[in-house]
Each structure stands twice: as structure tokens, then as C-alpha cells.
Image (cartoon, rainbow, N blue to C red):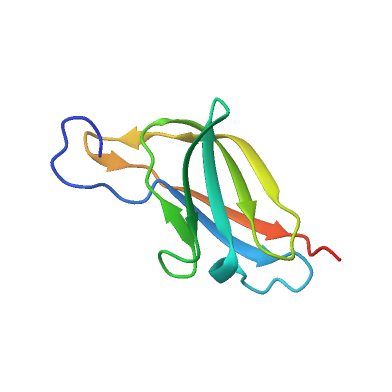
Length: 102
């Protein structure tokens, strides 16, 4: 939650994960790892909302790793989360296409 808020805010980072070759959704087996300054802050696996991986983080700049079994991981550095108004988190929406390996 944001400082001074008494109710939870929406998801601040949301990722849809697809197979780069087929464009099929692979979110069900994907993981989102969140770091800041090299420190692991959080991770979540599988869809949390409507075939997407979502996680709530306070304002800040984050480095993300998206992984799924059988695929090369992808990094997204410098993802910025902000808020608008007193208690509304802006959602960063990413679409990531992972490359199959092997």
C-alpha cells in the first residue's frame, strides 16, 4: 500500500508471457522475479489475474527477470513504478515473448 492509504491499490507490474515462435500464452508456467539494486525483493509464478502475472510494488525502479521452463529467461531493467493521486498505483503492463531453447 502507499503511505497514508487505508485500502490496497491495484497491481503495479503485470506481465503477459508468450512463446516467441508460436505467440501462444505460456503465463501458466512462467515466473516473475523482481530485484532492486541487485537485491531479490519478490517473485511469483503462474497467472495471478486473467492469464497474466501480476505483483504489487511501491514506487521505485525495478529489474525484472521473466522465466519459464524450456525457454531462455528475459531481463527487463529499469522498470519504473509510480502512483497517480494519493492512493492509486499506476500499472506497468509488459508483454514478453520468450525464446524456446533446445
